[in-house]
Length: 408
Ligand code: SAJ
Image 1: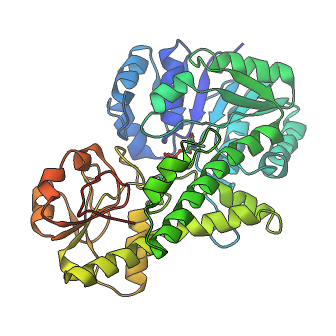
Image 2: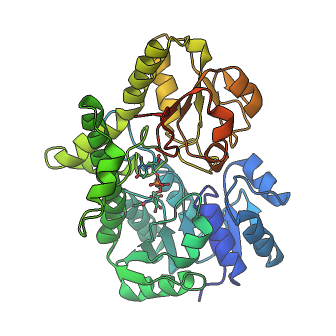
């Protein structure tokens, strides 16, 4: 029987998952080694902005959720720590998962289940996690079960998706898989499929790769259409009227910790085989530079000085405060490498200074520029066309169809 669930890693995935379980009557302790983060949560404040998160947090607090820097002695753990990738080899770096599992092994009871929610590349659990568990089990004479339950929620709509998305549970033993399925069913209304661990690992990476490849296709079309003066948005709109065509939207690049990262695991592990994926990732990674060229062309044509150009948006997508792998940061980084004066930048969701020339006041930002580049389609800018209509506008998301607005 599950007595207490110890969620390890209270980031974008771990925190909402812990809160969701606690709100649905499960006894939960959330553990993170970041003391400041744990203190913030203990003081009753959430650590990032997300629709519905505050409410879920109060609910979980009223049901007794606790936060700690200590691992707990129990029989069920959910590990949701980051899995970065090595930029050079493109392979996953499982060090955080290995460390978390190693520490769990010091605390867990016999017959415990360790659920890994972190995204891992196919084979990671067998190669790196299983040996750690098996050697410890042999010396302690314990039985420990591994389960992989990759998360699928999208920032900006996390709470709704936690409730409603279908899920995958990978386990060696179906009975253990069913036990964890029951745990997630305490809040999840979607279908939960129980399969084996390698399949669960692969499905997660494939889902994000599917999206990366399809975004790359839209980005490539944008480049072709720009080269030969065609309207990519009109073309995509018409093509999508075909019953079996559904093209995504081009943009200034792909950010976030998932779609811009996970497909590289397949390229790293199967370099000779994952060719479409490799090219797609390069296409997406090249978009910030493509937009930078576009900015240069337009500024040159309109005679605008570099210090009168401003980038609107620093996050990796609209209406969230998450800047991981953001196209704007990639673009600023590329500018820096070319020793160029950094462009002005403003984002209503980013209140801390994370880059040079960053504004925190929308009006002041607008007053200081003549050319605005819409990098992120936050609701604020969608509703502010009147404020920018007299400026030169490069709209990287096709949110304005006004005649004098430029597109990528
Ligand atoms: N983007 C485009 N064109 C599009 C759609 C998106 O350029 O047509 C860009 C966005 O602007 C953004 C990036 O792609 O920079 C990724 O954004 P997203 O909203 O598509 O996805 P993420 O990274 O926030 O979340 C994804 C989701 N995966 C899939 O949709 C297959 C989510 O379900 C996963 O939980 C998450 O990755 C994850 O953690 O793996």
